Structures are given as structure tokens and as C-alpha cells.
Amino acid sequence: MDRILSLDATGQLAALEAKRIGATELLEASLRRCDEVNGSINAVVMKDAARALERARAIDDHRARGDTLGPLAGLPMTIKDTFDVEGMPASSGLESFRRGKRPDSVVAAHVRQAGAVIWGKTNTPVMAGDFQTHNNLYGTTNNPWDLTRTSGGSSGGAAAALASRITALEIGSDIGGSLRTPASFCGVYSHKPTWGLVSQIGHVPPAPGWLSERDLNVVGPMARSARDLRLLLSVLEAGTAAKVQAPIELKGLRIGLWLEQPEFVLDPEVKSALEAFAGALAAEGAEVTPLAHPVEVGALLKAYRTLLGSLLAQDMPPARLGQMRRGRGGAKLALALGAGPDSAAAMLLDYTASHLDWLAADEVRARVGAQARKSFARFDVILAPVGPVAAFPHDHRPFQRRVLTLSDGTKAPYLALLRWVALATACGLPVTTVPAGRTPGGLPVGAQLIGPRGADSRTLAVAEAIEDRLGGFTRPPALDAAPT
Image (cartoon, rainbow, N blue to C red; front, top):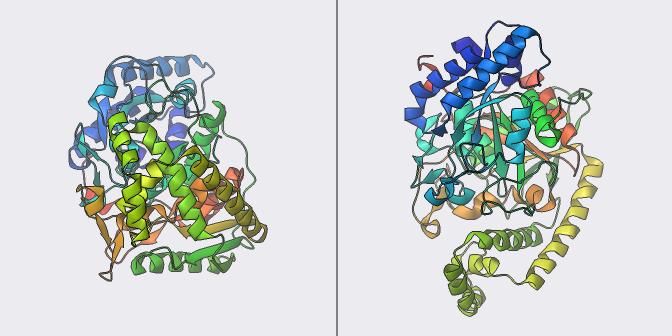
């Protein structure tokens, strides 16, 4: 079973279609793999094996009769525990949310209609609100490359399950790098769609039953190959089969290399890996041009924090939010006395922003978006870091006490993890995250391929071309010897 589980989703589906393996057998292999390695990484936190086996057997019967099947027919998969799945309601790390019965989220319904066999849920931080995956309900998810380090957040369980070959496809979400950071930390692929392309209904947060599409947040695919991202996105977008896309050649591709930004922290080892990656693309004929200051980053970050804080405040207990509002005067004074943009005072003002504050931030977002469009007139994609560091050791102290330690020993604010992802999030741009190399210590480094709004097919096609020429996913050595 090691060989079949090492295939990407497209490869596993081909084996199912050719009847080299049945849906039931493949599901049982995935469940065994989970039993063997999940104790080390704690990626999968909920199972519905009985219902999944019943569905897999039914798909095997349909295939034996020659019935028409969906594009994911018989493929076992897990889903991030921020999405409602029938029989497995989204807990988002909270005991109170996992009680009761709720129907499939829209994306769960789409993959089920396409024939996927949903058998488990993967871990996430409380209310998907951290760059690490940890909660008191299910515990901590470890990185398959180094169990002492985080798998990222908030789709950290999803990324760890993919890298560990427990699953071949996953669905994640992203409001502050939550698809991109775990993909980078675990060496897998993700796609952050253009905002609004994929339905968020049935995603928690916000609270269960919310019917409006949340600003900034997106729902997107995660996988071990770029072609799998395209396949799953086509299903998530409309519940239909994969769309045909003309391939892109690396030769002549115009890439803006955005690595220099004084306001943004970047670990020297991460930068070195991305420079080597850019050099490999140039050797394949891509036109790689350094890009500095593509937008007003100071205005971007301030606006993004206001937009984001306004949303996260919706998820806070009313009493706590009221207390924060009463503290606005003190927060303003602290900022006047020199508190920085990543300080607790700045966060308090973001969380308690008025509607006028939000409207001002939205106008800045529009201006920054116009600046970004000028860059995309010059470049097909912008290549940028996902974050300032590779996967770091677990740190579950209060946010205010956390810091990032770079490879040269310098320190950076924990919230620096928001900076490189801010442009695409605030402006609703598509991003395909691809494996780009490793640090000298062997930790994965991912790269953002950022495109203009609506150009999801472009960034995905670029990712496929890179994978074809330079390679892609590599199995984590720490789990490579695990029995399968």
C-alpha cells in the first residue's frame, strides 16, 4: 500500500478508474496509515470510518456495474475541522461547537457529490486563530518534518496529514495565511482562490449557521501536487469536473521576485532558499526580475489589520469585546508614546474599529489593489515568501509573549507572520503556494505565486509548469520509514 498512498490524488483516481484498487481497499489503507503515524503528528482528530466504508462499498458497486461516476469517485479524503460535515460538525477547536447535528458545508457537499469518501477531520487552532495548530480539545499537531515544531496554522492538521500521506486531498481556509503558512511549513501545495470564488457557507468561524460570506476569508484546496489543486478547485468552485487549461511554459514567463521589503522580516535561510529557487526558474528560461515596493506596504498593513481585527472581533465574547472598547483611550495613548504596530495596544484598536475606520481601511485596500494591478501589467506572477521563517518550535504562550527567532539569532514580532501574506489577502488575489526548497537544517520553504484578481488558472498553471520542470513534493524523512 505504500506505493498507492504515495501517489497524488490524480494518481490514486487513475488506479481506481483502472480497477487496480477498489475504493474500499484504498480507504482501509488510508485508515491504517492514519493509525500508524497519527499518534506522532496528531493531524486527524475525528473519524467516521463506518459511514465512509459504507460509501466506499457503494462506489465499488457502482463502478463494477459501469455506472457514471464523479471526478473524485472513491477517493478517501479528510477535511479541516472548520467545515461542517454531516456526522462530524465543525468544532473549530471548541467543545461546544462539536455538539448537535449540522448538514454538510457547501464545499463538503461538493466533494461528496463528486464521489469523494470523507472519513475524517483534521486539527485546527481555536476558531482558526493562530499560526500554530493547538487547542485544549484535541491538543497539538506536530510537523512531520520535525515533531518538535509546528505544522503551521490554521490548516495545520490538513498540511500535516497530506505530508504524512494519510490523505491525498484536503480543504482548508485562509484569512491570514492559513492555507499558505502550513503548506510552506510542511512542504505541500495550497491554493488561496480569488475572494468569493468558493463558498464559505458552513465554515466555522463565524459561529455555526452564519449565512454571509466573510470578508478576507477564502476556502481552497490543499494537496501534494499542483494538478491536484486544479482538480479540487474545479469541484469546490462549482461541483463539476476539472477544467481544461492550456499549459504554461517557464521559458519567457515574467516573474517579479519580491524578496526585498525593509518593513517585512525575512530569515536569511529562507531568503537564500527562495533565491536559489528563483535562480532555478531563470535557468529554465523564466524572466525573473527583482521587484521592490510593489505597493504602499505601510498603508497596506495598517488597513489589513483594521479589516482583519474587525472580523475577528465578531468571534469574541461580548463581555471581552466591551472591555476592549473601554480600553481604547489607553491604547491610543500607548501608541502615542511609541507602542508599535504589532503591540497589544494596536491590536486592541483594530479589534474595536468603528465602521468609519473600516470604510477608511477599505478605501486604502482599493488604492493598494490599483497599485498591484500596475505590477501585474509587467509580470505574469509575483514570487514572494510565504512568511518570514520556516517552521518554528511549538510555543503556546500568550500571543504577547511570543517572538520569532531567525537563523541569525535576531528576533521578530510573532505577528510578522502576517506581513508577506497581507497583499493577497487584503486585495482578494489568488495565490498558489509551492514547495521551493529547504533550509540548511532540512525544513521546507514554500513560495507564494501571486496573480491578479481572477487569475487562478494562471497561478495554478505556473505551479504545474514548475513542478514539471523542477519537481515538487518530497516525503518527510522522519516519517518515511513508518510502516505502511
